[in-house]
Structure formats: structure tokens, C-alpha cells
Length: 313
Length: 177
Ligand code: SF4
Ligand code: SF4
Image 1 (tube, rainbow over the protein chains, first blue to last red):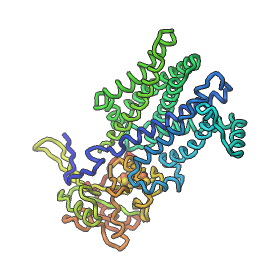
Image 2: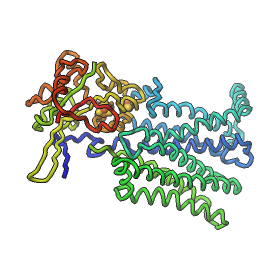
Image 3: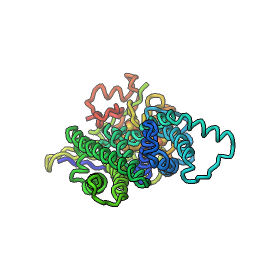
Image 4: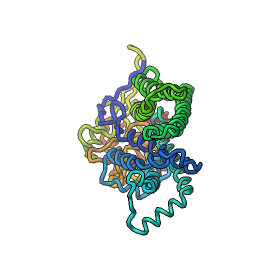
């Protein structure tokens, strides 16, 4: 028998009895970042493929909300900071070793890009929009002319942003549950899936909806595959990672993870989307809402459980 | 120069004087601490083994906390001491999450705080407050590059271990066993 106790009475707030320094702000920030990355990815992808006509919502409508998502995300990050007056310090250095740093810089680059996309499509909402100044009109004409180049730049940064939302966790070797490089692709794919879901929600075009739903089905499949691999990796690893996987395999997060993320957020929408493909009539908004719900839950549960996982002394 | 500390688990009696000395010296806010004492009991009565460890930041040579800091607030001072520059820290909490030893905390004023090896005393040639206060003299501090320093001398003669070396941080707090 081995018993370890801190006899001097350490009770540092948010550190003891187990780490809980990151509350809702960070998972929300990661969710919004992933969603923005997903929407931008599809918009840019269809422009590159020259399919703007077939996917009007993905290319024209959905990008309009991306600036809002990114600003809300940055605001959530700001709320997480405990020394807020020094926020600007984040943008005085680039530290490539620190995901927090290069992620903040990626957002600094992709936010203006998302504004360009929104500006190009503003007439979707305000058909009589007029840029008033000549230089703004010239700028618009410039981006319309080089839209494919813009799309390539966007797709590049969208993938970086999507992967970053997972790397922010996986770079911490101190938290064994996060310390798996699968989180990068997993969060990217999950972000793309929530992006696809948002497009479906906005779309009024039946063909577009059907085609995006098919893509989403594929993305959900990849996500399930990555989750299975994540657990296989953990269980074949050292005791610290086995223990961290056990948080989901009998531990306190078991019900939440398998029910909210896997069953309701992945498997159920996958079944509904498959049924739709076989011409069953299902309200089109149900699967995407479930997917978005699952995406939020994935991040919250991983954020909280990851902080509980730790090394053994 | 490489500052390090050795703690004798055989001499420590678990009085927690080091904790109080640190809190007083460094004006640690009420309810927080930068060092703490762990008591490990092994076996079943009457065959019991006891180990007492006064723990704190390990001032790791390969610190994840320095690596993950987005602003460079967490950094190495001379002699490898890991400290936080308060007015560079944005309080993002990345370093707190990155430390396998949970040695850091978020100061009520917003910045992140932790053991500094009492760098303000060390610069004046004094010992860290915990080392100076220990009634059993169970802690040794000094420069590992100086073979005559107390910590180099004791590590030459005693067996020692570090905590979770497999986390790859290369801790510089040694426990004599
Ligand atoms: S013990 Fe933790 S806070 Fe101290 S240097 Fe190592 S990783 Fe950083
Ligand atoms: S909380 Fe402060 S010291 Fe820690 S990583 Fe963030 S900026 Fe750096």
C-alpha cells in the first residue's frame, strides 16, 4: 500500500485538488476557431474547384458569419486571460515553440482574411450595398479578380487554424490525455464537420444540402476512426496514458463522452444523414444541430478531462 | 552556472517551516503556497516506510513552462532559475497547464507566480528562505558547476532521485534517499 498526501496543506485555487485553470473560455474559443476554419475551408475549396454556382451557401453566405465567430473566439480567449491589461504582450513576440503564441498570430492573419470574404459577399444580405469610396471599390475589384489566389491563402490558414485548435492541447506533455498528436487532425476534422453542418443549416438549396451532408457523413466517419485510434494509442501506451484513457472508460467522464460526443454528436447524426440519402424524410436541420452540439461537447469534455489527467509520482 | 537544490528525505521531519518561511519571505497571498511537503507512506503496519519531501518548482533544465509561454514572460534567469516577469505575463495559464508538477499558480493580481529559488536573496549571496529556515538543515543549495558548493558536495556522497524524470523536463531539485 502506498499513500501520498501533502501534509503542509497545499490548496492553491484552481490547482488543487486537481487542475482546473481553464474554464469554459478556452474550449469555446477552440470550438469557434474550428468552426470558422471549417466554413472558410469549404468556401475556399469550392472557389478553387470553380463550383461557386453549385454551392452558393458555402461560398457566399456562410463566410459572412466567420468574422463574428472569430471575434467572439478572440473575446473568449481574452476572458480567459487573468492579467488582461497585458493582453497586447501576446502580439509583441512570435514564439514558435508556444502554440498559444502562433495560434494567436494565426488568428491575427485569418481574421482580416475572413473580413475580405465577408466584404465580397456583403450584397447577399444588403443587395444595395455601396462601398462609397473609390479605393474600396478598387480593392473589391482586386479581390474579385484574384479570388482563387485568395482562396488558396485562405485554405492554407484555415487548415492551420483547425489543426492549431487541437495542438493547443496536444503540446502539453504534462496532461497525458491531451498528449497525443491525433488531437490535431481530430479537431481539424471536427471543425470541418461543424462547418459543413452550419452550411447545411443556412442552405436553401436542396442539391447543395444533400452534397454537403454527404461530405459531412465522410467527416463523421473519419472522426470516429480517429477517436478509436486515439484510445488504441492510449491503451497501448504507458500507465499514465492508460489512466488518462480510463477517465473515459469507466472514469468520471465515461457517460458524458460516449453519450454526448459519440452517440448524440456523431453516430446519431450519421445515421440520420444516411437515412436521408435513402430518401427517408428527416427534418434537414436535425443532423447539423446534433453535429454542432457534439463539436462543442468534444471540446468541453476534453478540456476538463485533460486537466484532470496527470503524471504519477 | 547551474543553481540546484537537494532535499534530504531522511532528515526532513515534515514540520512545514520551509513553507511558512517562503510565504513570509515572498509575501505569498493567503491560501497559496510555492512549496509544500509531501508525506509518502509505503507498506502495511507494522512494516511502514516513510518518505518526507519538501517540494517546489524544479527549475527544470528543459522547462515546458518556458517553452509554451506565448510572451516570453516565463524565462530562464542566470543559473537556470525559471522565473516569471510579472508585467509580461498575460495570465493565459498555458504554463500552469504545462507543468507536470503543478508548481505554479495564478496570483490573485492576475499574473502567474511560483518558486523563484529566492533569486533576490541568492543574488546577495544568501540562501533561499526555505533552506535558511529548515530546523533540521535538510536542504542544500548552490551551483552545480562549482564542485565545492553544498549541493555538489552532498550529491557526491549520497544517493538521490528526481521526481518524474520520465516527463523529460530534467528537474534540478534532487531528493536524497
Ligand atoms: S517544475 Fe514546473 S514550473 Fe518549475 S521549471 Fe519545471 S515545469 Fe516549470
Ligand atoms: S500565464 Fe503568463 S507566464 Fe504563463 S504562459 Fe501565459 S503569459 Fe507565460
